[in-house]
Length: 89
Image (cartoon, rainbow, N blue to C red; front, side, top):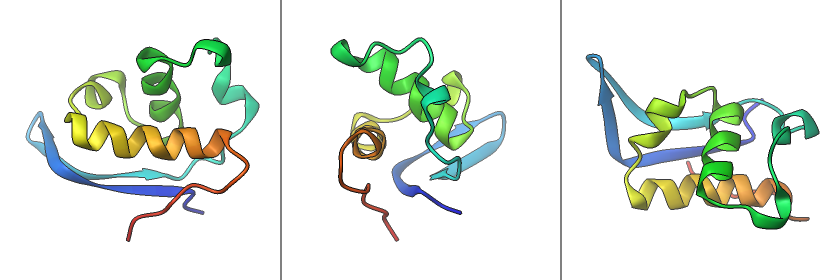
């Protein structure tokens, strides 16, 4: 099941591989928040949770453009809201 998807405005190229989208195919669970302080949800926390939910390494997540990072953050924050996240097609 796909819980969210972000089409990257600026694809990431690492090691000869081009990443054009992030697919959140891991069901968000409390275990993905381990070590995350929800009262002060900053960039490091969002990066960690995003990587856990779309199976991307911190290196890949760190290469996101600001525009794409905002899209990814919106998905992660949507999981914490009462409303479901927006899925881009």
